[in-house]
Image (cartoon, rainbow over all chains, first blue to last red; front, side):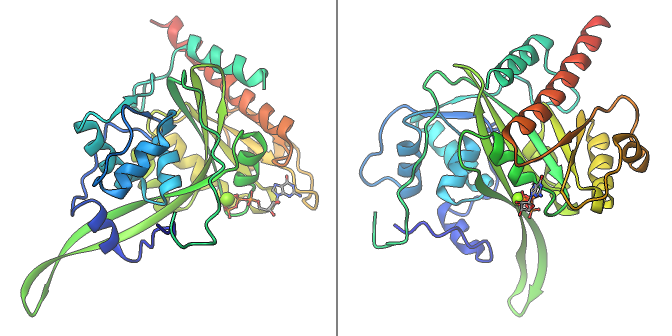
Length: 118
Length: 204
Ligand SMILES: Nc1nc2c(ncn2[C@@H]2O[C@H](COP(=O)(O)OP(=O)(O)OP(=O)(O)O)[C@@H](O)[C@H]2O)c(=O)[nH]1
Ligand SMILES: [Mg+2]
């Protein structure tokens, strides 16, 4: 398996990986943490298998995209498949992804504490 | 793993199994302003690259009749990671400020805690657009001035005026190459966000 960064000048390859689908599951945020519930099984699509390998420990959607060299949208589609198969769980961000909603001060206090301790 | 001898073994540092909550902060700024440098100096991993494609379908006509054609635009960005504690992980994104990028803002960065606008005083114009778009998206931000050695030293007040930046937006000097300085920028931002949250909670 070569890990050549995907050539986006060739949408055909992405089309093949996703079976022609282009609508991604919007519930996966860039920083939703993904954890495998099982290892890869023989005959599985190679991208699915790689995601399951990668997510033995939690990994954010964006880390998976970077490791696979695939656009985020494509990874969201693949994750949707794995979620439907019950092979992953998703830990979604606490702050609701709404534009105007501010995170609460307690959460920000924790972030500050973490940064100061770096 | 196949025949690609150039393929390096992946030195991923996995997250703690207890990691529960991912958080986002975005660093925006013009070309070469030091975004990747800032991300690298505070990240616990080597910055990684990824991209998002925007696909727009359009209908064209060829000799076989109507066909759907697609145009794709790619926007690349990089990111680093900071484990804040057992359960919280902060992802820091370096994002180009150019126009096409903002089409993807909501899809990529909704729910972001806040943003750092990185400014190079030699090319201040690049910052205008980013500031305007952040205000439009109502994303709270701070302005960090990356001090390149060969720049003329303008004071923060002069820069605030040049950017027509309201008084409530914090400004900070930084050296994107320094971990301590990068930390200070993030702390300035999160302090600002904390103040905003306290003020908002007081009105509830
Ligand atoms: N002297 C000095 N050089 C810096 C500083 N920050 C970054 N640089 C240098 O400026 C150059 C550009 O920095 P990058 O971090 O790649 O900038 P960027 O904003 O990520 O650039 P693009 O992603 O290409 O838009 C690099 O050669 C850095 O080493 C700084 O604070 N002082
Ligand atoms: Mg960069």
